[in-house]
Length: 348
Image (cartoon, rainbow, N blue to C red; front, side, top):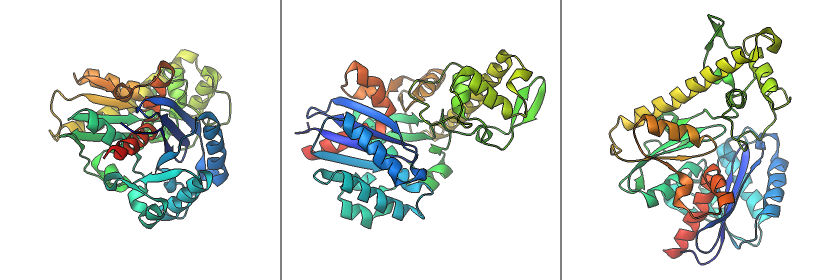
């Protein structure tokens, strides 16, 4: 058991997530805020201001990140350096550490000296917490932008890929999520009015639009402006979806656009399920091992678990949290995990 509260931070390219765990390891607060870091470091500072105004104070802070890869920075090393500097600037009096995967936690100076240990390690933090709770599992974190899949075996995360490139190759990282993914990244062609219609290669609509039309979009999932900056309503989403096939909303009844959205949802879900099939085909996970689901799209992972005849568990089930925070625990899994791991390290 940790001896004092810990705040965990997940500094992403599109969102800032934070979680405060008390001295008993229970989650007291969890928050996710939009943070379009590619627009400038001021976005991070603004998000930090808002998060710090919400969170109760703590002396200890633990950080993981993926924001180092945004095109604001010339390379990841520079990204890590600047994000470390920003966190040190905003938390000058904190006992601050940075998560380096298998290497544990590093100081700010150590993190800057070993940036590739720090870069995009947030998935490992979540998987490490899961591995501390169950000896075997397939952990799936479906977020607004990406999907992480990590095998847990013998009480340890067992990924084959260790960085973004390796994880893309091994199928453990999918660049697909339920809110920010452009639709032309989901499929090339869609069925509409009896024809196969190519999607326009334009940023007219995102997966948030199709999940909204399908009635499946969680309230907290879509925190960025719509592709056209327009209204986030069923009609607004249908209008954006229609543009993807060169049509206007009024050219077909709303149920036609909803059917198209349903098809696109099923197509994306199939891609995620096929990635699960690929990992499970390695026979590295016992047939009775559960699928552990996190992220704003975790409902998809739980549905996949049922189809695969496996137990589906929410990430939040492994932690104590108030009713109001329980859902946000799974939404903010890496931030929660890095705080838990930092508190656990105190025990060692």
